[in-house]
Length: 315
Image 1 (tube, rainbow, N blue to C red):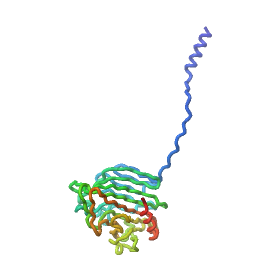
Image 2 (cartoon, rainbow, N blue to C red):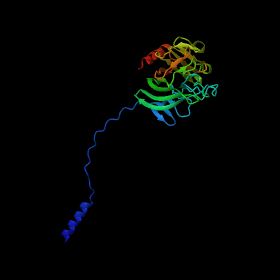
Image 3 (tube, rainbow, N blue to C red):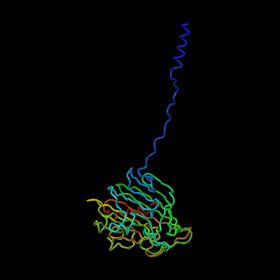
Image 4 (cartoon, rainbow, N blue to C red):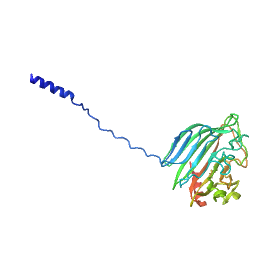
């Protein structure tokens, strides 16, 4: 009897023991991929942030309700913004001065330059984001729409940032403008197609800044509406700190060297049709490239020229 009870208890103990199963040795997992130093980060409300080491240096705005897409802020090597929204002395009348922007004053008789015409450049589609380590880009599609709702131009835009070292960087804007259904004329005007509104303290008039161009001219009196390969606008962004932005015209642009519309009040732009109108026929897009060199100090002309030549050699 005791033997039978002992066997019963032993069996119960065996059943109550936790059951262990063999665990396979972990397989070798792949090494993490390198994290790009520069990334373009999608944000809510139609925005994308270009971030270097997790810190924003530029933001692309393309959300619904805007008159046009634009870039703001443009952060210099010291960590401060080098551009601003609107004219410092006439913010309402110059509300269309959106830091860095693309538009044109006269597209087949329609004013896309101001905010009050009803003509808008509307974001249509995000094509892709692309991070390659030291370079990031966003490609978008936009429609140039009249106040009456007619689409005049379909635009593909690639906005690219490349790190240059020492906190400096290069912005490249590539445009392909294609007529929607009939030839569209970009009429003669000094206003368009790319504009830059510098920070107030960098302006010649407000902050004692300086404008220079590739031809050796200085400030508005000499630079205004003159052809050049590039124009640089530099000045104080903090006490003892000089920084600036150089606007590059590409030699393959059809009107190179561009006439630059530049003011001592802190505004500069490259004029695509200052001397002649330009037709865009359906199926024959107009390709344009502009660059902005965001730099420390008031760079020597030779240094700016070197950066312009590098910009020209980019694929």
